[in-house]
Image 1: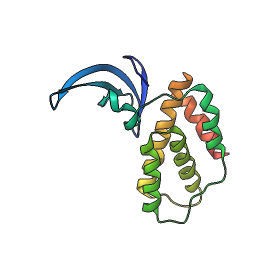
Image 2: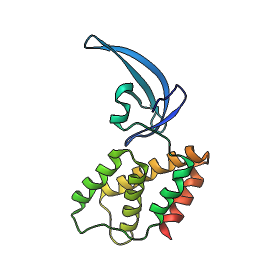
Image 3: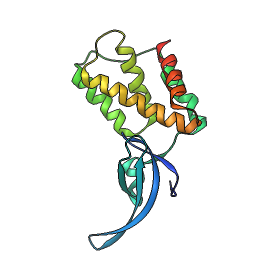
Length: 161
């Protein structure tokens, strides 16, 4: 996927970023081109080699045709959380978030949200729940050109019903 300056892209575990530039740098005597990304939530800047963007997991913002699939994941009442210790569960959830797939992030959010209704989440799990929620809200708000507060309310109603 080719991005242009001004495009939005999603960087795994960091969320939606704006492509603010394309730079060329010489590394080991070889010229290389990079996307310069500004993460919208944190204003952090990240350089991603253009020729490795797909390997890194850089992708476009979810399309409107995929939003319904995402909502189905969030509506699913069958939580498949096994009886692992919290730290094993945490590692599994972290792997899903690192993939950069909004669908995997939605599974993490749904499962942790439902889990918190039956038991107390660890500090790490609570932070991960907040991270997953933030990643979903930001991307859906940008994809649907909707205020984040509205997306957040819709998200809460989907998983709490």
